[in-house]
Length: 140
Image: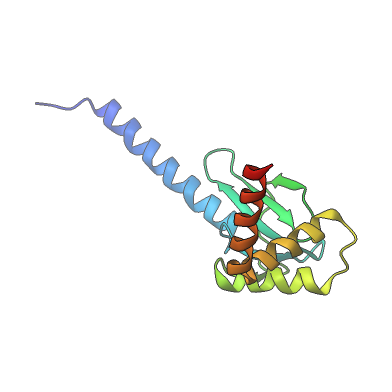
């Protein structure tokens, strides 16, 4: 059975365009991954990547450490100025904790982050307090 060459040609072209777009997005994102912490060389801003959307148009959601506001942008990674502070995982949590503890808690966001860090550092105490709060609600 003979294939329709125009359909086959358009399928191949579409696949090539998709592959080219994926390579383009990968160059724009650079090393950024969800959960990683990075420093923008232009703004000297330290931020955590919360989400990455690779479909057209691509963009990432970030939160500057110490703030609650979430921003969405599609600014390309600057290989000359931008820096990886911490890859996703334990190193990112350590970097986030260090930032929260070395900056004054002038905003509610930093105070909330310090509270969360205390809960992470003391899981047994946190579970006991949660159980106590639950028991107090039942008895009330």
